[in-house]
Amino acid sequence: MSSGAFPKVSVYIVNHNYGRYVEQAIESVLGQSFQDFELLIIDNNSTDGSREIISRYAQHEKTLTIFQDNIGLNRTNNVAIDQSTGRYVMRLDADDYLHENALEMLAGTLDRRPDVGLVFPDYFLIDPDGKLLDVVQRHDFDEVTLLDQPAHGACTMIRRECLEALGGYDEAYHCQDGWDIWVRFIQRYGVANIDLPLFYYRQHPASLTRDEKDILSTRSQILRKVARSVSEGLDCVAVIPIRGPEIDPRSVALRPLAGKPVLEWTIDAALDAQRISRVLVTSPDAAVEAHVRRTYGDRVVFFSRDWQLALPTKSLDATLTALFEGLPGEWRKFGALALLFVESPFRGARDIDAAIDALDVFGCNRVIGVRHLGGQLFCHEGNGMVPLRGSKLLRKESQEVYRPAGDVMIIRRGHHYRDTDLDHHVGHIEVDERAAHKIFSEWSWEVAEAFAESLRAEKPKAGGARAHTIRMGQ
Figure (cartoon, rainbow, N blue to C red):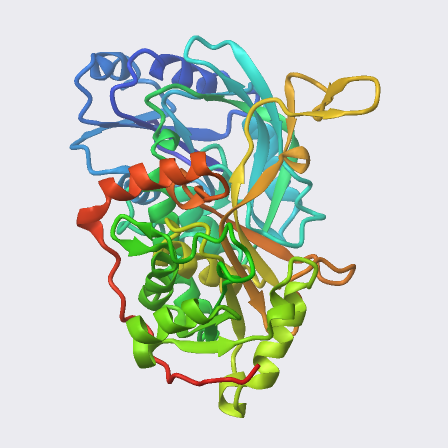
């Protein structure tokens, strides 16, 4: 790389065994309409011939090639920051490539908008062979008020001074670098998006994004660390409403699942959650009450509610109001409520904690667990089924569809369980397929049994929270 004045933009490509694609990534940078850049090509100990391809660019006037051990993505990101000199910094993954105007558009936005420290575009989604699958259109982030949908980790341009002020990338994580930077970044700096697809994101079986369990676990760790830094932490009470077989003959609450009743899976998860201070179970069912008292003693508060409040026609808000009106004054002091249902037995302490942390980090009124419904979706408009997305090749983030999953909802005090016109600042966490499984039929019970048997060696540990037992009259 030639010496002289520092470039405006530093682009770095991170490669590990992407010899099939890395040349296309490099050429897409060198061929940009905007030429005030430097390019760092960092190879993490590839064994597929990538080194030979990258070495051909070692003498190019705009490039710096770095060959190193495979030290992981976040550490490599920090190497790139240390070795680069540009005012703006952007990563490009070796299996992706840029539109020819990407740097011009992204750098131009940062030039024009001093209030913005990070800018990202829409993108093309392609398959391993480069075939176009979708055009992904992000929200207009000048209008977004709830920032719980991060920018893509790559092809996001960031002011160097902001990255350095944040201390760079957190090397405790080996993935989800975009989440790590995003949740810290939005606490201090503005973000923006460009309503144009400016890079090609390759989706293939080797993509890191396929490892959902690892991704969601890392996200929860990131949320936990950032929540500690931005808030003293809300006092959160878990409430577990159970109708029980006396009211609902289909209730599975006391049905044994891999050696313990279904309700214990949820109670144990709540007790094990670090963010839960007290656990309350509410039910009109005498058998449920007897089991909770016998099994948990003074670790769980039991609230015996009027059977009429457990009827399907009664709103849950009425149950919650009656619950807290009936408790002693000291029990009414809480900042948030974690509402948990026993029909999702595999939702764990990590999911509960992550949802509470999200409430703190993103400043939501409520947070719910969800699963993204991918693929094409249809609705019936009277004359037949029509796709919810108008264009087959345009995937708008504003039209993406999710379903509640994991039976977890965190409610900030002063807000409602139900939707109201004034209470729509609802955030989300994504839960994995295990946490999302809900028992609603005999078939779903058989699936739960099979999975629970495979987890017998991983029994949840109760004992995270402590509370007194209080007997409330009907």
